[in-house]
Length: 175
Image 1 (cartoon, rainbow, N blue to C red):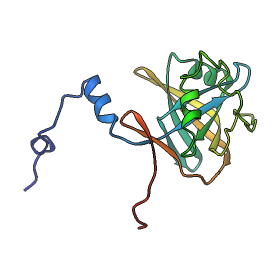
Image 2 (cartoon, helix red, strand yellow):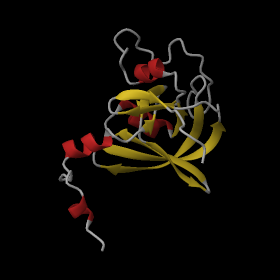
Image 3 (cartoon, one colour):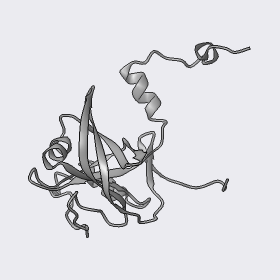
């Protein structure tokens, strides 16, 4: 006999902002840094909302706070690069999240980046260079859809983020 999901879940909550954020803290995400460069300036920020969108044509999406500097720069430059950080790049993730901005204003300082038309590729990152196709505003965020114009596959295990902290991926077994 089928049961309604609401009858099965004693931990069910109304979808308030706090309940949503609390539940999303249990969803692991790869840690990415979105970079951009062009007339609106060079910018980079740590982002966890990134996913593939389509393989034909190759495209991805990232979600950026609508009122953020990185969103304004991506819109102004019309390009962006998604850098999937390697598992040992916690310091880089924290730097692009703004943790060290008081001590080092240039988030790219000291990094050996590869310059591309879409934005800098960070060391050992798997990167997707993109031309901004469109943005869709939803709530507090801009969903930026990018047509992939270049790929740099570093082949590194990714850094992940869950429950307010960074994690590394440890495969249990091959399927």
